[in-house]
Length: 351
Ligand SMILES: NC(=O)c1ccc[n+]([C@@H]2O[C@H](COP(=O)([O-])OP(=O)(O)OC[C@H]3O[C@@H](n4cnc5c(N)ncnc54)[C@H](OP(=O)(O)O)[C@@H]3O)[C@@H](O)[C@H]2O)c1
Image 1 (cartoon, rainbow, N blue to C red):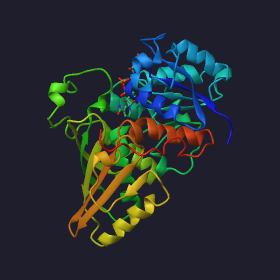
Image 2 (image 1 turned 120 degrees about the vertical axis):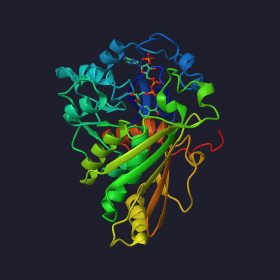
Image 3 (image 1 turned 45 degrees about the vertical axis):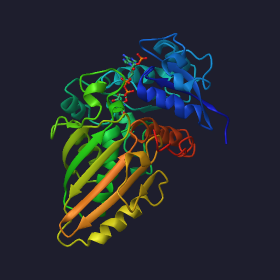
Image 4 (image 1 turned 90 degrees about the vertical axis):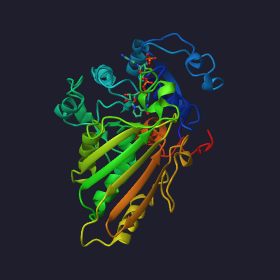
């Protein structure tokens, strides 16, 4: 395999950025070329991420203009963008503009390139798109759902969306189910990022469980749009997200009905078939627990059914399979590396 390739990261001191740095530190074919921070350029990287001490000795956070200069010099084979939505589009637009700027690959982890049509983004996020002319250069999907892609860059669907799509897309493709999906999901507090808010503050979150934005969360239309693009049929998603009393992990329960003529066991066969060649996704015989996958890039699914319908359970780590790890799968592919490179470490289970 080729020598290490240098990678840039945008997102500085953020949680997803930290996970990207951790994955790059253990990657057999990639190395960190530059990590850009908006708020803290010059800071020692291990001051922001003490868990990475020993991996990046002497490395400092750079400014966006330093990263941009390295990108234009051709020193970076790829860039992960883990900036907030609404900000990422403008940053990516800057990187991809100009004759000398189109040499590497970008994987965006924000919401800004999840939609080919910027009007759809504007409708869901309630703000103008920061780079409407660039959306056609990105493909957004869960990597397991798309064998080939025609664009030079990729977008990661997001954490709740990844968990939901892992269940919804093979259900649609099976042709055995009704098109309504009733979904309840619980996420850990890292899903909201590093900045504290009333709903992520420890006393509110610890030993607590509560729903938010029932039936009105933006991930529902997001999943409908992405699922339609890869499965050819737009599902109707009814989604109720919950905040859980743990730091990382997502558990999603998807319920629906089978078509009147469908054989329930055929649904299980279709699900197993959908993921039989994908090492990060396992269809398990028992209901999965978030500790089965937390700290890893793995997803675990379990299907229960009776004559009235089905319940499909999905667990992932929001920061890895739902963000940095899913994005790494895309970057590996875009750079011609094995898709699983740097992602095979198992989770610790007891954290
Ligand atoms: N957390 C998750 O589980 C998850 C899952 C899927 C997708 N995502 C998406 O991934 C992105 C990062 O999420 P996160 O959880 O890491 O959020 P976060 O902890 O809030 O980190 C975002 C970081 O972006 C940097 N930033 C802020 N403004 C910036 C600007 N104007 N230019 C460049 N960088 C800026 C900040 O670090 P510096 O000030 O150091 O630059 C900030 O810490 C978001 O778009 C989020 O929606 C998150």
